[in-house]
View 1 (cartoon, rainbow, N blue to C red):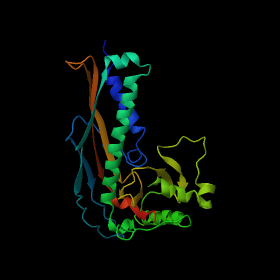
View 2 (view 1 turned 135 degrees about the vertical axis):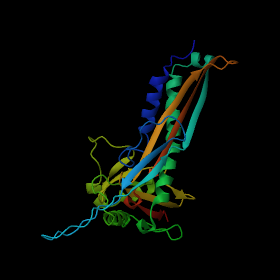
View 3 (view 1 turned 90 degrees about the vertical axis):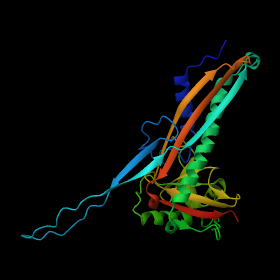
Length: 283
């Protein structure tokens, strides 16, 4: 007897599990404005924009300037990443186990897909940040302490202020050791901790210096020493994903069931000025 499996139901369950564990890919870090209908790897989403409108001074009884011709440009969000999972459950193993083997395996598959997507998003965002929005460098990283870790968050906020980044909804994603420094600062302890009655976003550990603080082990780093602590707003990056195929089958020469699925996704930094980074080292 094959596993009781309905492809459309399980496809939805997998995607929910994946979104539920993303840090860089959650909606308060990346927007999903252009996700649209994604059917296969290689699809492209076109993101259009128009030029700025010119503002002039009006003088009574004087002709105004000719109407400005607006130009449009577009950026391409390419769905060029594809990851799959593929596992097999032997009939004997299934019969001897009291746990829901398929359910557990699907959750683990979603977790591994999350790791791949989160790492990709973090790298994509980091590569797009303009040089003027960086504090520290790979050659000379900053070395935060418990006394100034909070100050660096303030500096990141100033960089975003100078680029007209919306104040409401800002985020910063920190590694565990940086969060540990914040926990030793009274300014964070008094106002940064989030009440237990609030529903937290994935990885959210508090608020400070105008940011929602998110913690992740996927913060980009060089040889585990020079971490790129990204800050910004969800208007900067757009992300699109889809589980495009999910199948269960019985291998011809085995007694058991196999499941395979395909996850496609892509991201584009459309407003790089609304991202900033602190390049920091533990010591």
